[in-house]
Image (tube, rainbow, N blue to C red; front, side):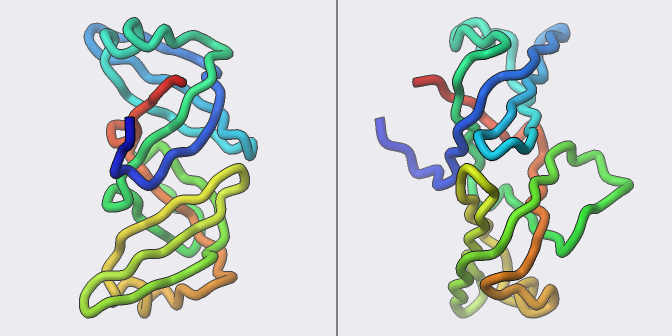
Length: 139
C-alpha cells in the first residue's frame, strides 16, 4: 500500500496505556526521541501493539507545527527536536524538511511563518504534533 503521508518515522512501542475507548501509545523513534500517539483501542488490538512492537509513526505534513525552541504551557505532547535541511517556498505556503535523527519530517507552514521564524537550512527547530494526529502502522 502506498500512502500520501510524507512523514513516516520508524520506532518501537515503549508503552500502551488503555482507556475506555482510546489508548495512548508511547513510541521511541529510531533516533531516540519519544512520541505519543492517541489511537483507538480497536486499532491497538488490530495492530497487535505491545511493548517492543516495531511501528511507523505517521503524521500529515499539515499537522506539524514548528517552533524555534521548546514550548511550555501547551497540551501538545510531542515536541521533537531537529534541524532544518530544506525550505521550499511558494506564493503562500512553504514546505520545511527537518532531520530528526532516525528520520525526516516535513512541515507545511505559511511562507510568512518561515520568514517570521527565520527558518533556513541549518536552523534548529522543534516540531510539534498533537498525539491525536499521530497514526501508527506496522509492517
